[in-house]
Image (cartoon, helix red, strand yellow):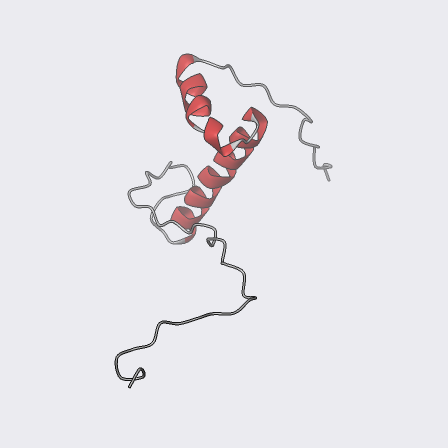
Length: 94
């Protein structure tokens, strides 16, 4: 029985013009280029696995993603302390 091989600690990818542009487009996220590549591979794996597991693609096929659904982090909420002074309605001011 063969032993599983350990993945390499580093992976090198040639930084061509297209990859450089794509990494630059993600600069506002403040992720490192390494984290950008890791998250990109994880997203590709998720798309691939869902397509294969649902019979949309065969294991040797690369599916094309045709739709997106986003979930954004929740917006910060205002503090819930303090006193609220609501304006009186016309009915309540009589």
